[in-house]
Length: 629
Image 1 (cartoon, one colour):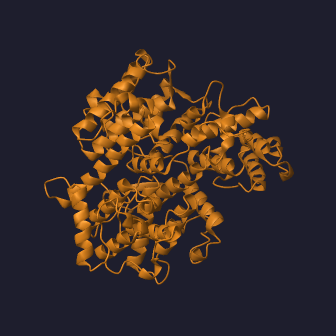
Image 2 (cartoon, rainbow, N blue to C red):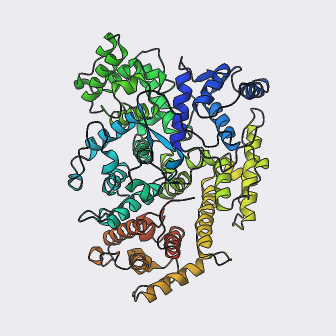
Image 3 (cartoon, helix red, strand yellow):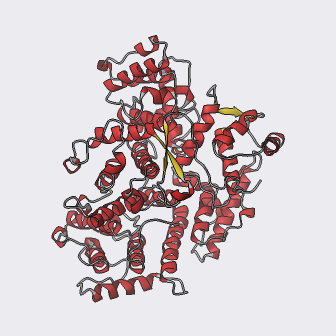
């Protein structure tokens, strides 16, 4: 079978749909499907293969012992198969799982290709769940009085996002302070100022780690349902998962298994942590059942009922009365009434529980965890915790990678880069064709996996040297071991190369853009607009009050900045206020800025460079929208 190249990407939504299809077939909920069921699963994912081809795949996987359990396939193995098929372009267009149930609505005419019969399916449960979540969490916001509440069926959701204000507010709810409220156009909106809001929301969602490839402000202005729901899910999921950390919940250490260290917990995905959390409470409740997925396993509400009673405060009167009801739909309703006593009746309806809708049940459980973790705080300080909390720099790099659409999704920088596969995808984005995929181990054998991963990391360092990265003292072993300092050194150079490669393409001068040219351009632009500020270097202490960034934005798009909102600067709080305004206004123009306000006030030269480089890119194509190729 063909190897998986970088052009093959599966975004989180596609992966969720794969999971839904897989677990619909996994009737007993043990996390595996029989190889005899493979054709059914592939058909459901849009890979219409002839029977002989599927039999050939089964023989290859089973006979060569490429699977963990003979005759059966885990979800991870199924996902790898689909990625390989996708790279083979078996499906001319990768089709997300489309169930024929009544809960899907097919919408035609929503794209430029609609004349060719293009349609998209929208899951009505998501429409309802996200609308309800928005009503519950944002209904008191005075800026949203003209938009909320959304109707009970969520049909108006797509119209409500068109002025961009609601999307900006949702992003700030999930990741507080991402967008400076002063940058949002709120009154006397025109088509242009609405477009600015949508651009601000899109670029800001990218900065928090959303993959917005092939979405632009025009799509949202048209209210394209599949794109709106896909973006909303990413933003809401990021907000829910942000809280599943040791910093927010030190009691997570309770979930460590015998022989595990805290580092092992950090390597788990949020989904895996939530499964472990549910099973921890089932064990404490003396219940024999265990949860292996958020589809078939939770559909009878039994696990949920025990979980709710276990995490509920004693005075909340949460009971197991749902288990007395035989009808699963009625039982789910009674169970959700218990969740309501905890203020956690969110995301799912009884139907969503019974049908095991993956995304919505995952969100339901994450919301339960965030509000009622029910985990005992460890006695004393957690040894080494300060070294395990994600730093601002690590988070910025992780968000950048995830917004590029890499697979797997990066949850913890060091463990998720240790096999080199994410790094290769980034190289291929920066300089297409540079990776010789025949040299890359994409699957790891049981006996040689440690050596295979190390070989990948050695090749990753070799490619960095080809791109003239400064990698003195960095070896593949350092990446494989998760050495923080040396891994960050490589990642920064990847991000720098990406930023400068975009700029070089736009400048079209035939030679690479370097930092010195950016400084020269900044000063010429400021002088041409008769601004008083200037830039000596990216270490220039005057950057701290953000005025040079603010002036540059106004030089690129005159009249953009409201100077009445700009503070004189000097005190730290004034500098930070200016920096927040500067970054949001840069994003509002379409500049894909990943840096944070603190990077400006603390004059972090690496991140300061990316801010100016992104603004320079904006100037080369002043009408640039945020749609990416």
